Length: 195
Image (cartoon, rainbow, N blue to C red; front, side):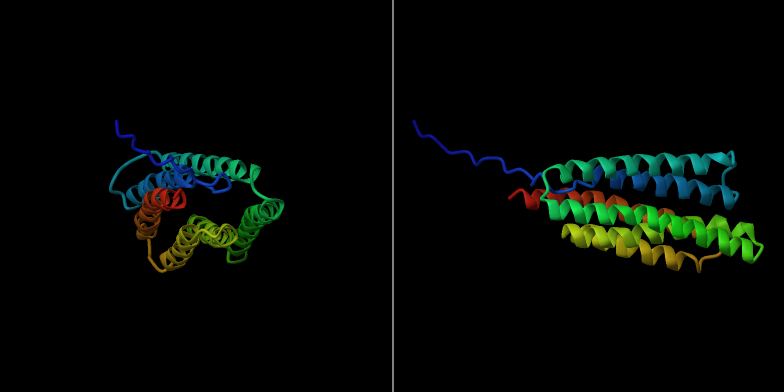
């Protein structure tokens, strides 16, 4: 009888962060949250004013929980230097959003235009997320995460040039599609690391 050796299944390193679930959560937020804001503000669909925010928040909360869980799981097996770097990058989330809150509140107050918050919060938060992804990608040696961050920061900044409801369309289509593509490419990246 001929015995054939089956190759052992290789596993992804335990210190690697799997971002697939987080990317899909954020894709939901962008496509359905910003997408419904586009439809509502362009008066294409009548919906309650709370619905776009609720859809956006649902995706953001899910994505955040998945991202934190994956990061903490990977840190358990990481060397001390990597854990320290992850913690430092982790504090950037608090710093970035505290600075954003001050900037948005300051600009809308000084110019006496509270309606600016409607645009500055989505664009500003996407820029902050993009910049933190760039830092996380550098710390983790993850080019996909780094490139996604670059794309998000640039798209959000460019979206500020789009007037009216089109602003939300840019975030929904270009931001949502980027997250969906990243979720697909993340599977390929993890499979490549396993061999």
